[in-house]
Length: 161
Image (cartoon, rainbow, N blue to C red; front, side, top):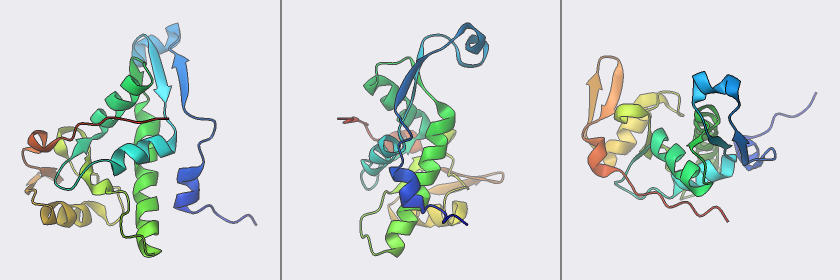
């Protein structure tokens, strides 16, 4: 039986990415027109890692920064979300191995400032980390949201080379 890859190994496996694709006619209804970058996992992780203490980003800002860096009209939402999730698990793995500066994945939010409940430890763990950095987290139904998250958005400047 083959050994399962660690989260850090998954993060390091670029799978021939990034890749820029031109959206075909059949894709227009779902994605729109233009070009789309499918980012590499390490690109997503590097941007998440660049968010300083007290600042936040959303997946949308990540996608926009990657699209701008690759000079495309958009960035794939599916792979960006998956790679952010992998980066979060790899960060926890790094913490367990003694890394003192893992990727601060809890600073990467979903749309509307929502905490991602699929990150390690769930929304409550991310809430504790965000509150320790001075953010106020409120419940909106079953979701946890960082209050006034827009006021704390970091400026992302991807350095892809």
